[in-house]
Image: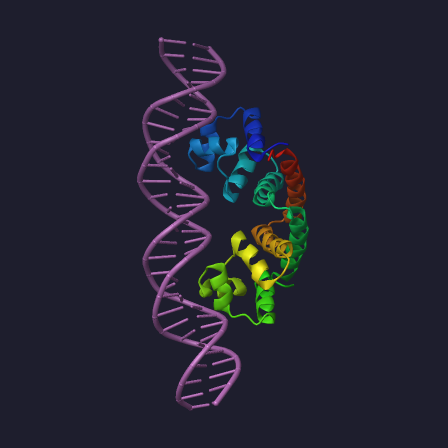
Length: 101
Length: 101
DNA sequence: CTTTGTTTGACATTATTTGTCAAATATAAA
DNA sequence: TTTATATTTGACAAATAATGTCAAACAAAG
């Protein structure tokens, strides 16, 4: 199963970009980007948007990878993880329906 | 839709317990428990276990409420929230299957 | 070997979480 | 109402976690 970091790295290399080029575009140190690709640091949402832009991948696709990975590692050690996800889906629908925006 | 805090408070009152009694059992300040019930602070997993014990509710049930609420608020503002949950479920299964323990 | 790119670790800085306490507010009893 | 008890709130401190910076180590290519 592909991790977010692996996805980022493969896309970056496919475009022939260097860490420092992408890192400069994201306005972060290249050490951090290296760690993100290695899975030792988590990107933030701003990073995801910028990465989608420079790597020319769909932002939603990248965001799904980002969020799902975060969630999965938060709960994978719990017996009731799957059940929690199902309830979470209900709550998300509830929150979205009741958020005045 | 019932929040985790509301569930805790209703169970506590049903048992006729005071904040300070429950808080002492959890080994936290009663101010924190009050905030947890009001939704202004998040309990941790140890709190959940203790709460299940003293309130005599199923630990899994409480944990599901705790995890699902945490997840829901993390992602509810994203367009792709539901998709992320579905991918997260796959990842959880993958992680569980590949975790040597 | 030299150059360029990547990875790693130590450390500082910043942000977030968590805890403590006392005052304010509410609730109930007399 | 007054008194006693319970709850809630906010200011602040302490602890913890996230993030950034930098340089050295390492890897790959020429």
